[in-house]
Length: 266
Image (tube, helix red, strand yellow):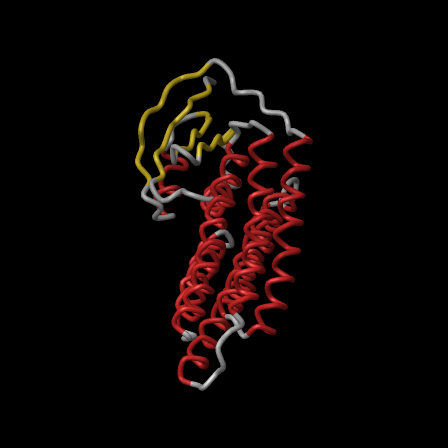
């Protein structure tokens, strides 16, 4: 039977969470031979046997803005051997993210900064996504879904806890966060993410998982800059509200990520 490549545009696919979401949704569809992702172009190529009706409705059910582009018959499937260098780089990125999760969480509590605490949870969310991608390799579908569900619920609990803490600090009479720590620790986290981005770019890979990691890390850099700016505003305004605002924004980002990951377990 001929191999067919069906291409879909996924308008809401902008990080590894959506890629994993699609992979898990299509897990077990026997007609599918291989999936190739291009995060930068927001496209996925599905190499399959038979008609696309066996899986297209599953893609649409994810509500990620999917749009069918074309189907063509291909002579062979692209040969993609797992690259040990890529895995090593992803392990380094995971380690950096998890380490700074611990550092930012500790200094966040000591400095009374919701921005640092929220950024630490974003780093943890990144670690969970990278870890899920690496850990799930070779596992059965049921085990993958269990990992996704645990990761999603864990992130959701932390995000809700953070949002409740923001509200408590808003209505309470908390002292100003230590803006020096906000700026210094976020600057160090920024350097860590720049190192991660350098390592990913050094691989010079066009493969989907590396491109996705690059986009994900770039988003982290923007968040780090946001916390640094919030620290400066705390100093200039003598108000805790810039810290609470940036903390709320990041907590909502983490919550959104948890909801996406929970879809993997369905």
